[in-house]
Amino acid sequence: MKAAADSLALSSPALTRRIQALERYVGHPLFERRHQSVHLNPDGERLMAEIGPSIDALALAMERATGNVEMM
Image 1: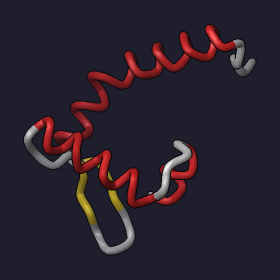
Image 2 (image 1 turned 90 degrees about the vertical axis):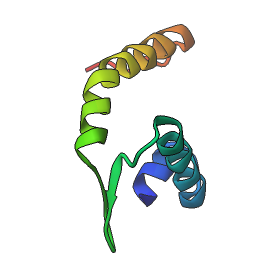
Image 3 (image 1 turned 45 degrees about the vertical axis):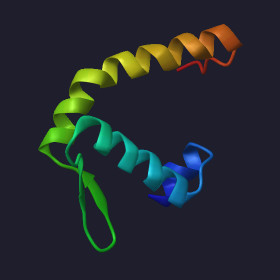
């Protein structure tokens, strides 16, 4: 969770609040929470599979618009 928060320039508690808000919005949990880990549950996996390509396309468009495209 800390690594994800760091990559998003958020604190861990801020990321947790955003995840909780998303889960409230969709009406059910999207993650399995364990003592030292958090993983997508089947509902979260399904949502990610459906919206992931759009998020990737949006990120790429924003990188191109700002001139921050990383070459592979």
